[in-house]
Length: 165
Ligand code: FES
Image (cartoon, rainbow, N blue to C red; front, side):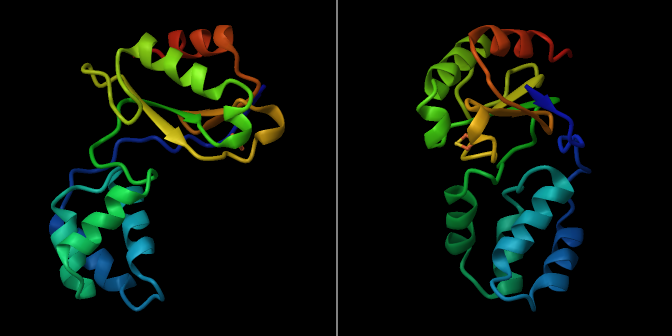
């Protein structure tokens, strides 16, 4: 099963600390501003550059360790630019119960990378995600922003083979 959604995986502009600071300054008044700022940075650049950590810490009057801790705690925050294609395999309960872990191991073997890594040629990033809201058609994935359900070995193999360059 596939459902169309707009692609969310586009390469962002090169990281710019001055622009990141302006973005953080514009959002620092928000309640719990750290998460919205980090999300906005990831949306802008496609990942959270290490150089963003001291900028955000300074704007919010937090320590670098506090900001770094949040960036590294949440799976949704990417710490390096993504590959040209992003495969997110759901690892939450309903997908686990329907073979999601086996599929994740299969994808890792096929791509030669661990979850959270990008192939050396920059073609594919493989990530874990924790529930895509498609539990009824688990196991599920998101591929370049497109939701895919009822995955099995054959569907996963076809999906990886069909990613293109
Ligand atoms: S647990 Fe995988 S989509 Fe909900």
